[in-house]
Image 1 (cartoon, rainbow, N blue to C red):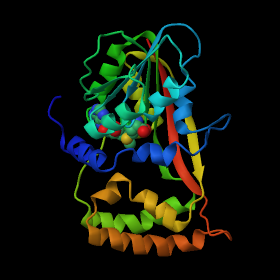
Image 2 (cartoon, rainbow, N blue to C red):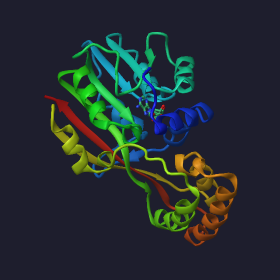
Image 3 (cartoon, protein in one colour):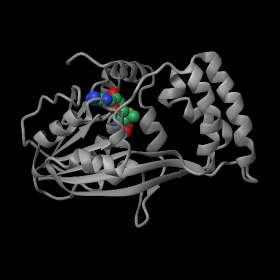
Image 4 (cartoon, rainbow, N blue to C red):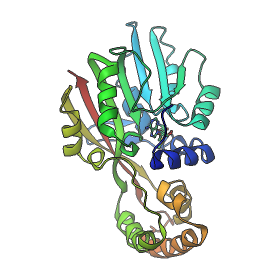
Length: 277
Ligand SMILES: C[S@@+](CC[C@H](N)C(=O)[O-])C[C@H]1O[C@@H](n2cnc3c(N)ncnc32)[C@H](O)[C@@H]1O
């Protein structure tokens, strides 16, 4: 694998320590758009891959612990070739332990895929592309490995938390982050907006489409804090700053609890789809 950038080195270290946190957060929560619902945000992507007997190759780019590949493997479609790529050895080891031997897994960077051109029918990616450096090179590689007419579909971040608690969190997080969080830039701003994605996919892709995907969740403040501990920026704080943030957040979030003690929130995601021209 080519040398990692500073952000990639951090991500690799995080995923070595915190294997499977993304699927732990998202796999059990139903997702919906304005017109449809799915068992999870992973199913938004797996449902795009047709059921049937046609030979199809599906690449999960930055597959993590392989949850999305597992949904596809569970179909037992004999003509479905499944391939997962991730730069984290620990996530890939978890994927290897969970998936059938027929699923091919490789440790690679998305910027330099060791795959033949035009060899993939469906390229899917869940909660990873917005983290990637040199996204233009990633998009070039996606286009190269997709066959003409092949389909790209990704879930990326849209907002952070849904509802009022997002603003409450940002209000307590920003002052602490401004002094305590070492600078480290993740990904490319364009991967955070529809206009950015249109610009990125302009060369080589057609039929670009988007859906807002909401993943509602009603945790207690404590459960929400536990989930936030698995996010990159909170992980990067030192213990003292993290404890200060915890106290400030739990205090600020307390008034948002409904009578049952839960906070109506969730995760705001975006589905991006395009066809390789
Ligand atoms: C938030 S996790 C998502 C994992 C998985 N797709 C899921 O949703 O369960 C992000 C993943 O992207 C991988 N990743 C980030 N940048 C990458 C890159 N440039 N090339 C390959 N993998 C990358 C990380 O190793 C990590 O497994």
